[in-house]
Length: 502
Image (cartoon, rainbow, N blue to C red):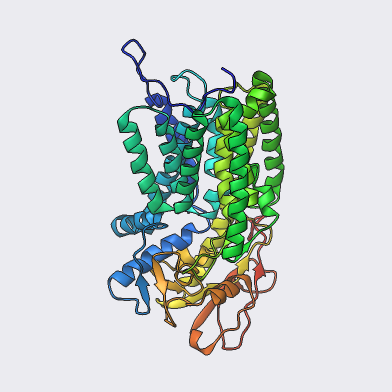
């Protein structure tokens, strides 16, 4: 089979075929339980924007009850699924349980969607699940996208991967289920849906071509991506950066809290390179180039570089950011699908297992450090009367995911107002702010300047309290009432070694 028809749907199961299951139940259940351990091993889940999503779910309740004049709930069709989940769970179970249930569901959706996609893309017999890739997929599940708290995108990508896996089957119910999953994914985030449609269309076109003509299809797709990048740059304000180059391989998902994770990312890249060499040896270069899975990997990597990393769309007050870093997660899953059918040699399998264990060990330590800081911040806010406005200038300069940027949001749920919370001012989320109000700053540029430093406090902001170190270089945190004319500056908090000691 020159070039392969790897993207073709699985044949219909005949009466003599063994029953086909997506995953053996005992292994699947055990793996799911193990996979959710990081959602419960700390006092709070540290995942960047998760705190903001939780806070805005609480604000949405105030708006619905008419207790937040100046804020409104917008009706929108996407970028809302995770927020709606949190709102329902918050109302039923409270904040702590709501975030654990919603995040656990998101992790399972992404992991099993990716697992099903990788399995459906491999050449192995239907009952041979790609268990050797489970540790790698688990690491990706808790990688950069998860730690940034981009859960609408994260859920959407998991659902789209599951939908693509279903399209490999010929049964009508599978196609109907794939369409339904894509529809739900759109409610979460539109970007993965557009990506999945592109993957599906390219795969179907490639099936209709002789293998050697697929190279022309790939060249045409690359030209289309380049043209799309040019047109987006000409029509809308966009931004590009070197981070897009880092995102081309997908290993940047391993780099989360600090620079120590770079060594892990390099280790993953080395193992993946050697694994790819194994695949190349098994299939030879010509067959590899004609393999649809390889072409999809190449196109996904090229798209990360050719398309803008940030774009400001009409109607939004802030740009759609971190597009390359988000899509690198999809590229990493595509690579896993490419190599799934080749067994990794035991030495490399051991190396990958060691990297995964070290990744989770380091993330546990960093999460614990963040939780200790957040506990101290929470204790400081507890001294305030209820319904006060609070900001925080704490930041870790070595943290790639801005772990402290939104900590005050979760702290304020039910007790205070996170005045610099960015969501209402962007016009990208359900909760919107129009004009001055007592709950949140309405201008995105001003919200950003509070978070990054340089904001000059205005009389309209008062009373306003800032969480900062009690004394320069100290390990305790205090609340300071701010005065009009004061300039907010970031206070660096190095989380490694742990702030405040044991």
